[in-house]
Amino acid sequence: MTKTMLIAGFGPGISMAVAERFGREGFALGLVARNQERLASEAKALAGKGIRAEIFPGDVADPGAVPALIAGVRAKLGRVGVLHWNAYAGHAGDLLTADPASLRAVFDVPVVSLVTAVQSLLPDLTGQPQSAVLVTNGGLALPDPAVDAMAVGWNAMGLAVANAAKHRVVRLLNAKLAPQNVYVGEVMVMRPVKGTSWDDGTSTLEASTIANRFWESYQSRGPISVTVG
Image (cartoon, rainbow, N blue to C red; front, side, top):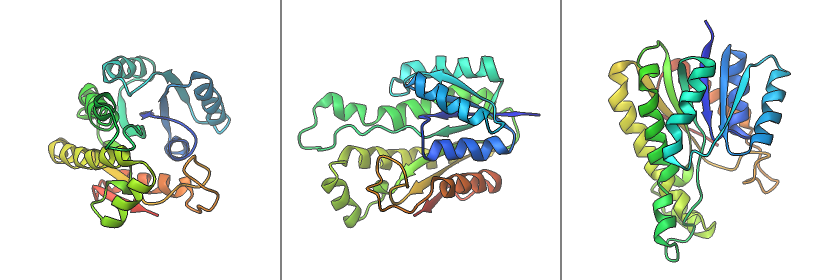
């Protein structure tokens, strides 16, 4: 039986590699992102590889829009067995100058929208074997002086806060859902990925390496956090 995977924050790079990896294993894919034209192009590329991918344009930075997006995926592809949360937001780069709205927005994607998505998917996730929530995270989450300096230097302080919050969300959701046989885990990417907007031309970390780690975590259902890079 075909399983369905919903990928939120879909685009070139990590999520495309994840789509290809899970698509090769027989998953049908629901792709969620803001840019409809790009979604259509990427879904066509996946179809050329024999992978079914349907597009669902929407903005997961708006938590209120998440339940309807999920309902649309379910209506077209059936119950969702795996959620891949690849979305992130880079608000409040400088905590000393960020306005209150930007500070609040730091938590919308990694906390409010992610949790809302899991809540909306609970009937699907708890009713299927081998269900999972797989989260892309970054090394800026780590409490380390060198990482702190990097976040400040990159003007990515809000992203560091968001990643740290997402890290806690992943661990708490895993603790809550593990008794119901739902695996929640993250891959923490420790350096820029080749070919993405973070790559200055020197990165050698391939998106496919990260996708393989997600597949390994999905199959083994542990540990909660793995690092790549």
